[in-house]
Image: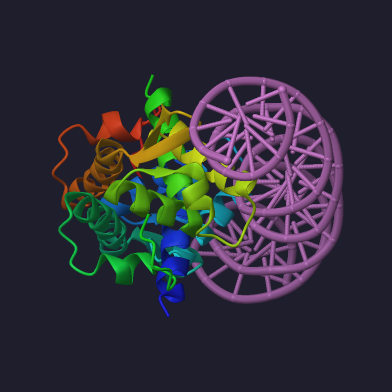
Length: 114
Length: 114
DNA sequence: TTGACATACAACCAAATGGTTGTATAAATA
DNA sequence: TATTTATACAACCATTTGGTTGTATGTCAA
């Protein structure tokens, strides 16, 4: 059911849980950068940076477009917003503002709500 | 410099990047639960759930208080908000609304801003 | 006091993660 | 054409992660 949603949340937060990837994302949100231009910024191999970009891409946090031999990465602010929305959902839950908490928490059929 | 901030962001997003932990956090934001009450909800050992709770606790996303032999976990909405704030900072960066981008992106002394 | 319950924590294991080097291919340039 | 540049990707490795079981300790209740 909401397994795909959870997969997406896993990918989003995992991608965000690394400082190099967050930095790549920041730069890519400000403007497009080629992967090698990004790689020059960090004290690691090109291949390592390339992998970080791939993680961000799989999470939907950035897209690459081709320009000649370069791959230009630009941040996807919509994905950032969707991650933020997941956190706001948690805040709403705390506020008690979500109507069908049971739907969200999947009570599992047990009668005891603890 | 901002290494402590980055450590904190790492911990926050890492803690959020697991569906079991997000579920524990949701429940704990709605109301306090003992660790064993939480553990009963999931198809894994008590020790595994205990470790997830510890990850959330280290990230500041929940706190435990002692009541007799129980450890009651409650979600810390402030930490959720601080994670959301990190994402809003990314959105602001995209909007070009952050004044000193160079401070945030730590230009590294290079003159070529790409 | 005895036993059941709740937690804590160590030791272990398979899989994933974050890095490396090496190789291949396409595109720009001398 | 030959060379350099940019990317892609495989193979490998050390560490971390997410799970397990086992043991110890503290608390409640009969």
